[in-house]
Amino acid sequence: MRAIAWIFGGLVAFALATSFVVVDETEHVVVTQFGKPTAVYSDAGLRFKAPAPIQRVARFDKRRLFTETRPTELLTADKKNIVVSGYISWRIKDPLASLRAVRTREFAENRLVALVQSELGSGVGGLAFATLISKDDERGGLAPLEHAVRDASAHTAGDDYGIEILDFGVTRLSFPPQNLQSVFARMRAERSRIARGYRSEGEAEARKIRARADRERDELLANARADAARVRGEGEAEAARVYADAYTGHEALFRFLRTLEAYEKALNENTTIVLPADSPFLDLLVSKLPSAHGGASGQ
Image (tube, rainbow, N blue to C red; front, side, top):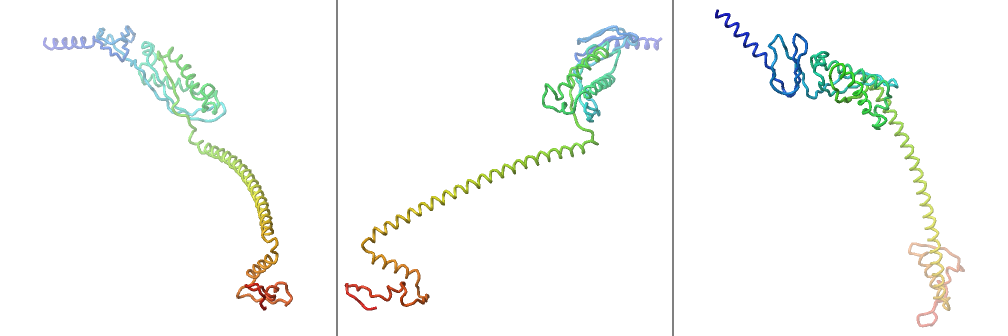
């Protein structure tokens, strides 16, 4: 009798323990009876149900969840292979549909990733690579592709899995490793071509600037020389006029002074000059000079 009492007490305790359902504010709870849903609780609180194994509980997280998609190699409309990976933001919208279709989060993530990658492959296949990397968000870039994939996937996910796709984004867009070297080589060749063009334009402009500077320099020098010659001529003319005015009426003194200047420039202690006796250059040396008292002196 005591053993039966212990067994009965244990069964009662188990029934009581499995008759209460604590619903957390972060989850949906679905109560099933022999595999068929009988109740859905989404508000936090304490609920009652029939003890197990008559009724069981399935729990689903109702918070916003994030799932990363694995890198996938896709082909663009212009036949370029690219590697794309991204993320999915989602949450359980219909716990009954999710219970029937996916049951667990892992299975739900696998279904979502497969669905999104299928739509992503279709979207990338209809766009050229240049459109994907364009900075114009209205005509190209990743934003239109991300929105298209999200909208196309959300319809199927909501109807078939009871899941609401909140957002989809691309986290990586690159070339496959085997294509990187050829891509880098083309990029280097293109940059080299552009650099050569810039250098050629710069050299041509430099030649123009040098030619213009040389022409301006020659013009300035020619003008300066002309001005110098004019000023020099004017100065010499003025000097000649001044000399002429100064020595007017004193021609003998002028000739005397000029002869002394000539002697000073031509003769010094190391100079030997051989001239005929009747050379005009010797006139002053061999002629009679006036004395300091106005008289005459010998040679």
